[in-house]
Length: 610
Image (cartoon, rainbow, N blue to C red; front, side):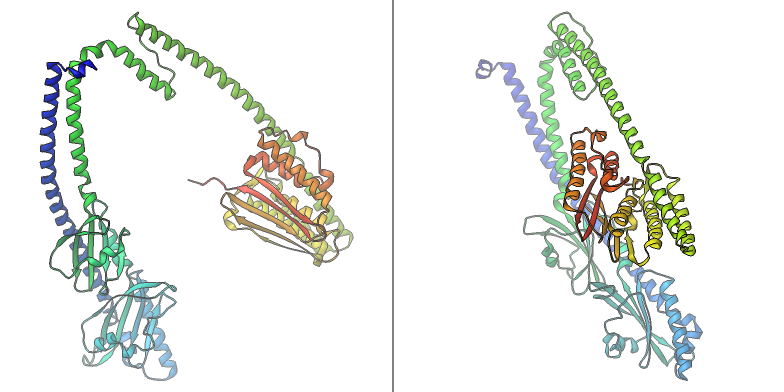
């Protein structure tokens, strides 16, 4: 405090040098900012104007190419003859109509994708080929249209500026048209009709998409009604576009919105099409690099001041260099690098601190090594236990399915239903081909094929008593699930829902996408479950769920529930799902006695493929 109350000469001198340096730097930086901002503004204005003028020239060239399409009939004498000799028998008129419309189809499909509709018309007949479900808005009244009358009075092509009309739905699409009068080659004074080409603005959009403006500039195209038919970005203040005077001869101007944001505006009119091209550049974004440069300059000035002060304090830093090295190495330790050591150069207090730091790093390395080994042993033990348990659960499945299927075929043969038995054997063969070559995981598509084979056999057995429908979204077919996760649930629906019930039983298998994965629903309108049995099964499922939540999946300690649902049932599937997916999977059971049962599997979304 005393040092600052009575500064020394050296302190005053350093302060004056610093103050003078700051003043010079600020003045020079401000003047440089003003000069460079004017230069950059003018350069941006000129470059942007050249860009939009080139875009306008490209649009003109594009429209001229479309104009040449309307000359296509003159290169096809057959079409001109059909137009000139349109009268005749109904069959001849029909043949002429087919030829002309096939010609219009070739004109549309060959050159450009943006062409929506092509018409060839006169006072008596209209020929059309369209890619849209809607015809032109004045299809039924075209003889009264101003464009038709104008086309009939001149041989020059007529351009109909972009206007909104229905093309592919209720939402209107910007459409512009080229119209040209068609005359006879034999008699140039004879008018055969008018050709009209409707196109959307995607061709113009492709031209504008190639335009690159600096500083996050925005490009807009307006029609004669000042409607925006193209824009590269949304304006923060949409009403700003209304204040642009596109008819002014002034090439550039500044605009300011209600929030005080300034924009640099360039405009250009495409006179042949009535389109107006407007480019907006944010003045703030344009000046931001200069402002950043100014800030860097000021920062550099302060850095020079600090270096001046540091020069006088250099001898202090010389003695504290070892301490600074230790601090730097401590930051590396914080980032996880434990392979570093401090070089001990002195035997003083700093040397003692360096030696203590090295010993601490060595002890941390030993501790992490022991901890990593323990974690690895615990993980391997749990993984081996989980893998062996999973294999044991999977091994319960195949014999059960084979027994039930063979039993079904045996009953069909005993009943002398040989055709059905042959069909059942074929389905069983396909079923065996599906399950004999699978391991512990299969695709959803393969699982559904197994289910369909099983239900086909069961339907032969129960005939009209059993109906089913499987409706799984195709996008889920590639998902991997534990094998035979759905078929046993269908088997339970047949065994416990269809067999004991009188009347028809319907089994429905559907899927549904959710935010966290997808659901598989297996529903039947069978006999259902009694309340006591339902609660008992739900309790076992909840016990399994809770065991996974506390990371102790000792499934072998759970009570066996095979007596409730058969050898392969809900509990088996529940265990396999939890072993595979953990808490990301779930199983839900809803049943009412006499009404039916619904089982829902909750499965996580499959990992995305890069």
